[in-house]
Amino acid sequence: VMDTDTATILAIHSDLYRTTTWSDEAEVIHHITKTLADKGVNTNFNPWSLIELYNPECIVAHNAEFDKTKVVKRWPEFGKLPWICTQRDLPHEKFMSKVSSGKLQHLAVDYDLQPARKHRAAFDALLCCEIAAKHDLQAAIKVSNEPKYCVYAWFEGKPDYKDTKFITHKDYLKKAGFRWDGDNWMKSNVAESILKKYVTLATATQGWKSRTVLENKQN
Image (cartoon, rainbow, N blue to C red; front, top):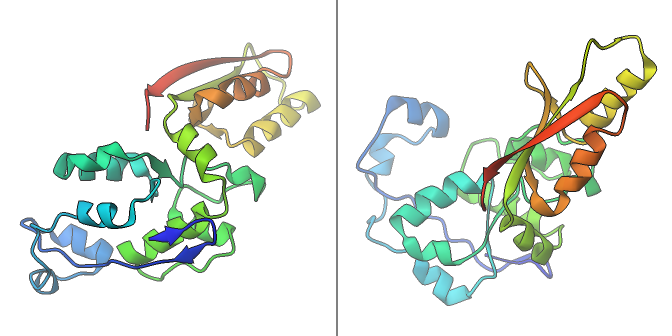
């Protein structure tokens, strides 16, 4: 739990919960043995009691759409709060020219934060809070509730790979967060409020075309 106005951690709630399912594949990732997990606390605990205690403005998570789906399915109350995704809803370009990757650990390094050596929920939550605290959360909440689009850009016709304008435009796309998917340059999870900006950028040079595809109505 973080006070984002002062970037102060108010409390850390971290418990290992018992699980009814297990796999060797999962253990390879998180290094938590089944013996250790069996010693976890009772799964009947409802974390919504913590929400009622602290009355937060929002929930912050990395790849929040995945976490929100899992959490709301089990505890529907969590759907009442806005979810901010540190991967998609924050304007990282204000702090850096390019994000290393979509991974939280890499993003933390981009922000000169020290990531944990192991994938642990508590450490990941702290990193999310620290990253989010650097941004305007009210603006991020608004963005998180907007429809998200994928913007595709491509050169119409046969490109001249020696043409300076063609090369420069590709560099603009890369710096703006577009990536090559094998057929087109694309940028996913573009909020509706800034969609026009990326469409304009995608077609700024003669010969370049673009299209947009709605990804989800809201995060």
